[in-house]
Length: 475
Ligand code: SF4
Image 1 (tube, rainbow, N blue to C red):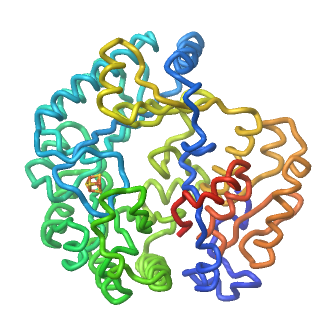
Image 2 (cartoon, rainbow, N blue to C red; image 1 turned 60 degrees about the horizontal axis):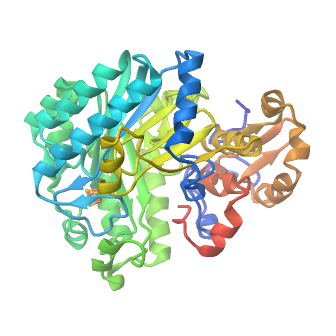
């Protein structure tokens, strides 16, 4: 790791090595930008990459007899009620039978992968996301796990995580999830303030979240994450401070503080949010700054972008060791590996390719019932894409680009290949956000809050996208 990378130390523009970023920098770099859970980003995927393209890559993996464990993401698209800020691919229904029917298709997809891979491949990471995974009742969820364990060999230390809407579970359900060998939970809380909760149609009591978090610890979950959102209607710096105080008291192992992007023309539920109740941009930025300040002052380590963790959490440990990675699940301790995206709209990665499933239940269901992989679109990376992916992921995870490492991996003159990008990064250097020398590029203490903006410099597809204004904001 470069000695300057992601270390909170003083710099010329940040003499005190202060923890929260300067307000004017937040304002300046609060521009549209992708989250880089992949590069190229999913909006570059093409339909020319289809089920047969993925079949070929699966065949290659099977032929090589790789033993590198897989990561598996399972998407459960159902929610019993809609949250007005939602930008996810979900189906709002109270009909639990739809969940059971969906799981039958999901199992068909798992079987198809099993056939293509030709043997019980090891799995070291599994994540259930949604939607609301706990929309599925215990028995239905168990049938998914049984199906996965039949086809794949989970490693003894496998990370098994699930997103939990606190409104949908009680302590008994948490016990059941632990019995199903989930070892990590992620609670979607968003805000503890009752008024804010009412404005976004997601009401849950603080007591309930405390009770569940306490129970999760007693039961033995290894890590509990809590998601918050800033920029929601009826939020102010004062209300968000109280929410953060409550969060600090709750003390989950991991915290994510996402920024709300109001795009009602794209996401229908957001049309129910009253624009006049949204906090002004300046207040939204102040909330993010406050979150960084309060969380780091209370012992949390800043992991990157919107993520924080307690110092002994695996993510913080991996960051200290320079072993942090990033995939479609966000920051992770799992090394770069092939990933299967299961379920409607899920995205996976196989070798130098990405593939995304159909976004509608009908198309997804038709494909798996016909014995086909339900691939809607995907992407095969060129050598240039892979080089840029390495640089972008390195900035996002370890806050550095080592010229020598890229030279060794790609047999290129890195400084020459990235001469334009290095030129564009001079502006960041002048602001004290990066340091460029003969060894590489290192993100400074202040720069670490803007890794997304720094990574964007390496994204060759971005310019046209930015002109269309189709990304959420950087912070
Ligand atoms: S935010 Fe989550 S729980 Fe709420 S509607 Fe969207 S997917 Fe469902």
